[in-house]
Image 1 (cartoon, one colour):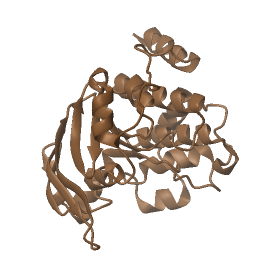
Image 2 (cartoon, helix red, strand yellow):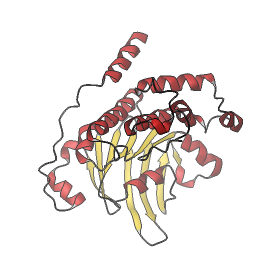
Image 3 (cartoon, rainbow, N blue to C red):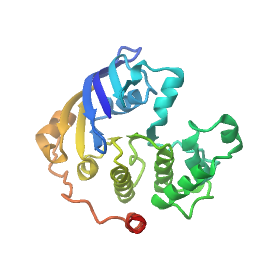
Amino acid sequence: MLRVSSLSKRYKTGDEALHGVSFDLPAGQVVALIGPSGSGKSTLIRCINRLVKPTGGSIEFNGTDVTRLGGRGLRRARRHMGMIFQEYALVERLSVMENVLSGRLGYVPFWRSFLRRFPQADVDKAFALLDRVGLSDQVDKRASALSGGQRQRVGIARALEQDPKLLLVDEPTASLDPKTARQIMRLICEVCRERGLPAIVSLHDVPLAKLFADRIVGLRAGEIVFDGEPGALDTAMLTQIYGEEDWTQIHADDKLEPESDNAQRHQERMAGLT
């Protein structure tokens, strides 16, 4: 699905944000990227979808090296990479539905997007996704009127509206309170597992990463220093990633909390269709 090989990124200032980063991401796996500020987490995500151009190495996505793409080829590749941002990146004056439908901009002619006349199939899908993320009652509300958690749910629905084959998520919980952060991470992991969708999620919250991710990749100074299961991330490894600190207060539950009511309703609905 995704293979990153010897990836490097050096900025014009001479700073090397990434140095020889290599890893594979199989279908359906949720990977949490952790590491201190400046370790290269956001740069790595932005290199994968080519918002940032790597200095060296390769990024093979569905058999194509995206580092060699440009123009139309790059736009086609990006269609299949859903992006969820820390600061939501919504159009504040537009409605929730219009923001979700913007996930189809790479697929429809310009005149349709300009006039906001999307195919009915896209609209139907947007309604279903808003129901899935718990916002079916907020369809016509302006994005500017939403809470932080609601905005992030819109961002998730917009990314899924693209029909992505890969989900890239940059600090989705950084602006949220602890309870909402857990709800958002749970939702991201649920929809990824429902769809067999691989995801890379950049996180500062180590307990959150250990609680929800299938795998954790730890970066320090642009290099991978840990790549393994959450349970293998012990205090010695946390010290290697972040430096000396008392890590005894970091605890994560062994099991996920009970599913949200919305997720349960979705599963019951899906069961009724089979």
